[in-house]
Length: 201
Ligand code: SF4
Image (cartoon, rainbow, N blue to C red):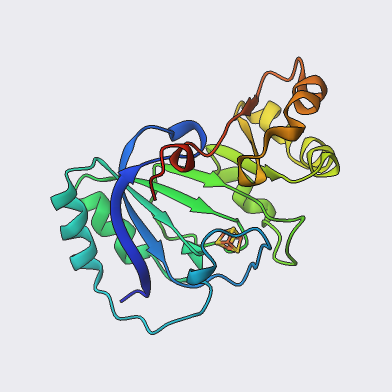
């Protein structure tokens, strides 16, 4: 059983998977506590009452190829059964996580690591970088970018994975400076949160 905040079909709005139709499963609970969080309604923990099999049935009914586990922080709960069932039914699994928690028994096809090191005591665990298909960071001011380029970009370069840069609240006031600073960095991608532009969930 899992505590779920909401489930819905939509289009992925962030990162390299932007544009892919997915069945979103927003898990309840997040102790990371970022000040800019746009899903604060997920923070409080709740009883685990939703059956994994019911979630999978609804995902299959949505006709999406991908199921996206997001939150809240999806890895605060044990999602091993859900991910195994998703695999058994041929769904591709995308996980969006802060990286503050590690589960070694889950299945996934794509893990987006979105570290919140600068905004929380719950920093991304080093092991989570090893599992990331992309690292996606939120820039609120130029010193944030300096930190990400120092702490994460060398890893991205070494492992040929993108460092996706987004600006808090899609505020592009730092865009020109970011382009200047990252010029020549082949693994940097600069993006907006497309679902907010399209006014989707
Ligand atoms: S990790 Fe994500 S869900 Fe949790 S507080 Fe930060 S932005 Fe919100």
